[in-house]
Image (tube, rainbow, N blue to C red; front, side, top):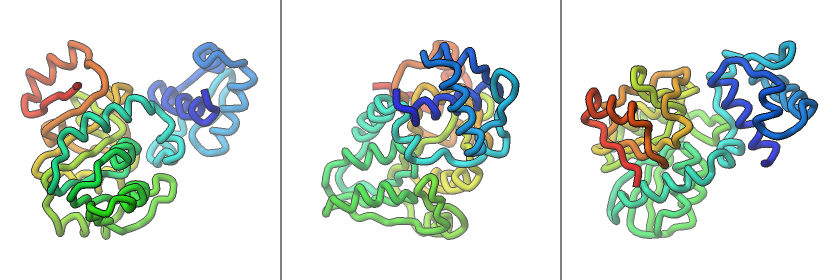
Length: 255
């Protein structure tokens, strides 16, 4: 496992549990406790956590910020590429679509065939990827650049989205909770994605299974605001039952 990937998984652990122990992380990642202490020291300097005796606690303020794209793109790679492949089945020539600034959308942009499409995005990475494909018209929202996520947010990004209606939007987020809906770690990203949902005729939420049951900081939308939920692995029976009973408008796509 790469160091950056281990750091990302430590962040995921502490966001989920709010507190982590050196001994538990050492066992989880099969590295020495001294290695984990160095990891925690580095993550503390980056503001993700505060070290305590024998472990660390979550920096609640940092949870609101974006995880750097470079870390997201190496996290759960196989799951995200699978999501991208499934989502691509629903993209047809002449479609107008939205891709958000998620790493999953970036993987999707990599494999979209060079056919007539119009793509609106707030992602620099998606723009760069699609610029290689001459038959795809790309519209970038502009706005305030968040360098950590290589994305545009803010009033200008939202205003740009208000000028268009699209067939389909493909959006990821930090968590899906049965009671609290879809959530994001960053409020500005949540506001942009809310507008993406409103702008699209059909909406596809793309979530790897690590995000199911997770509640992040900022509310994005209720579950029924999306038409389809694309996941990379079967969901627990309890969640499927709840979705069937309480959220019939949300269709789950696994394969």
